[in-house]
Amino acid sequence: MRLSLAIALFLAAPLGADVVPQATSDENDEPNKIVQMVTVSGECSRLVHAGLAMDGCKPILVNMNYSTGVSTYWFMTESTILSFSGNGSRRVEQGSDIVVQAIETVILAATTGAPEEQGQEDAAVGFCRFGDPTIKGSTIECVAHTQAGPYEGAFTTDGNPPKLEAFQINP
Image 1 (cartoon, rainbow, N blue to C red):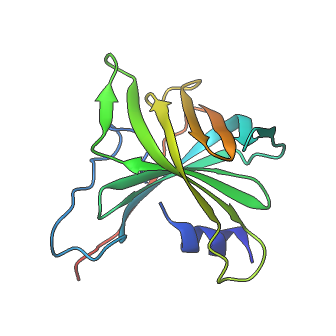
Image 2: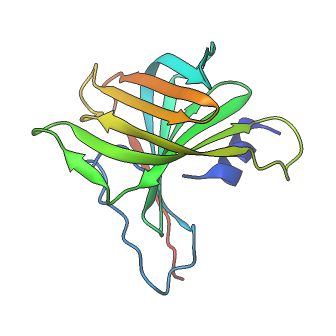
């Protein structure tokens, strides 16, 4: 399965509180509908899966927001997507340019294999911390601990504007 198909199967949340307005939940919303997707370019400097350092992290980071309020951050290699997921309303501003979001779930999915493969989902305790992705050198860092071990991702932006896609959830 190609990376684009894996992304379609695992769509998840946005990168900055100031860059994209936070999705809100509505009783009439269908569960887990994608509301926004933000793609940031730069350099992935660290990727750890269950305590094992990984090579080949892609130079893009995807942040997705769902109608349920869930926000996810995807770190990708040629063969995997590591998603840090949490409730987008659980964000805290630390100063004027740093936001921290709680992470409750880590999902590790293969980008190759049968389409029905869902990936491994683990309960987690962690956070993602990020600043303004339009500033070159801004860091997006996610750290989460699971029973399988620690998961980490670190990404440095190149200063190019994020690419935003908004999705209509109610026709």
